[in-house]
Image (cartoon, rainbow, N blue to C red; front, side, top):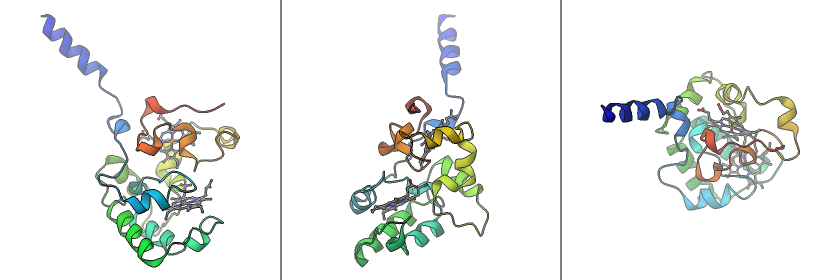
Length: 162
Ligand code: HEC
Ligand code: HEC
C-alpha cells in the first residue's frame, strides 16, 4: 500500500509543460561559434531559428543589427555550417518544431524574439518590463533566464529583474 502512494506522489510531481525543461544547448558545440557569437551577447540557441534565417544573417554580418560583426571567409563558413546543422529544422527538441510551425513559409526572421513562438511564450511580459534598464529588450535573454548560457531556459531559472 505504501509503495502505491509513493508512485502516485511521483506522478503528480512531474512537470506539466513537458518541453519546458529541455536544454537548448546544441548536442555538440563549435568553438568558433561559441567564441565569435558570444562576444556581444549570449550565443543564441541555433535551434530557435530556421536554416534560411541563419544563412541570411551570416550573409550580412557587416551590417548586423547596426554593428559590424564580420568574420573571415573560412570562419564564417564553419559557423554557418554549424548553425544550419543545428537549426530549427534539425534541432532535436520540441521547441524547435514549435518555432518552425509558428513561421509562414516566406518568413525569414533575423530575430528569435520576433518569431510568433517567442511572442506567444512571452505574452505575460508587459512592454514596461521589456523597457526596464536591467532588461534592455527581448534580445537580452540572460537578464531573465539565468541559465541561458548553458541552454537552460526552464521555468525555475527565470527571474525578472526589477
Ligand atoms: C559586434 C557585436 C556582435 C557580434 C560579434 C555578434 N552580434 Fe549578434 N547582435 C548584436 C547586436 C547589437 C544585436 C541586437 C541586440 C538587441 O536588439 O538588443 C544582435 C542580435 C542578434 C540576434 C537577434 C536576437 C533576438 O532574437 O532579438 C541574433 C540571432 C544574433 N545576434 C546572432 C549572432 C550570431 C550568430 C553571431 C556570430 C556569427 C553574432 N550574433 C555576433 C551584436 C553582435
Ligand atoms: C523580461 C524577461 C525575459 C527575457 C529578456 C527573455 N525571456 Fe524567455 N521567458 C520569460 C518568461 C516570463 C517566460 C514564461 C515562463 C512561463 O511560461 O512560465 C519565458 C519563457 C521562455 C521559454 C520557455 C518556453 C516554453 O517552451 O515553455 C524559452 C525557451 C525562452 N523564454 C527563451 C528566451 C530567449 C531565447 C530569450 C532571448 C532571445 C528570452 N527568452 C528572453 C522571460 C524572459
